[in-house]
Length: 518
Image 1 (cartoon, rainbow, N blue to C red):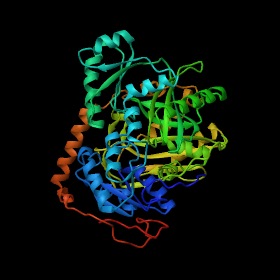
Image 2: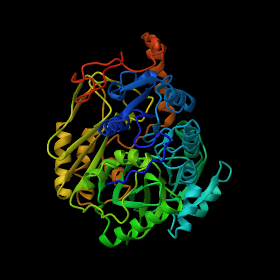
Image 3: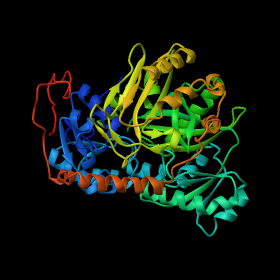
């Protein structure tokens, strides 16, 4: 698909790449690197010493304590690991530092290639205010909102917009730091909650307000772009099934997008991507508000959690494309897009207890059975015997299915969930399997409030777990580890892992490098 052009100092494809992330996305990147014949370097916190991405990578380096601010968000420790491992590039995955312009700039200054957009692009798109201005310059409508929100002026700004409104983090993503506000008396309490979560997740407490549309659909357009001015879209996906503004189920193509609207919304996405000079891989997101009217929502300059649905309907490997484009390869000019012959649906399975208001669940995985069969894919960063921690996002795996149409894809997802079993932590899977039978979702006639309406019909399902509770629970886990004598994990284990039999199940399957770090 690509024509290679040497743009980094070594020329050609990278020899070794460090993955500045964890969990299923780190595993996903390791597999793409392996197919390219590129060495993979993992980093891990004390809580992730036995994690799957550490086991599968060719090398693994510790970067600090469990708390993200002292490990996965510590730029200095990540760059030191990259120097020790002698990599040529760093892949940030999604979340953590993936869209942090300062990190991207630090990576480049340290002499590595950042597998993502330029720091200048990230500065624009991660500031929601600047991103909206760019969309306006591209001629695309944006959702009405208010900027520079403080505890002192929030009441006046919300009154001008009219309730309901959405409090959102300026530096946010993935629904973090966002709160729906329906009444004036909720403003200050939710402002404090959203500020704490934004500071916890992004080290930036700034918020802004956005008018909530009544029954919007959340549509994303997948963009790929090289560093030589060529770009293309890979159709749209829908992510309207959400809880607390965090996506739960995604599908591609969207059942709410007509061929006419697809042409309009993909053109708008490409116009915005060119305006902000988005490169490598990214997504332009919109809110669809009935009658084919859409508003710009934001730009994600990274691989998205839901990228597998695009891969399933196009047959392309987006993570591999990221790496190839970062190494200097070109997109074909005027190349034909794949035909839409498949429908794909993804469900995020999280370690949360729906019966307890989605309280995060932690523990040791004592039993694990993953689904399989025709057109079923599982992206996972877990294994039998692994401990699920409260320190990180509760996502444990994603189940993705495809079919000739939406009905077939849904049927396969239902079967996959019936086969899935995990013991040791409570997950959202059984609850969400019930949701698949919810009529508005089954018919494809749904919006971003569909899961809330479903959950409101089930006793005990409306409670949300505040960020304070999550932080307190994480602190208790830390104390528990210390009491159990796990403080010894602070001992440094630096450098390449010892080679083992490549055909051992827990090591690298079908490869020539790998093994376990003990």
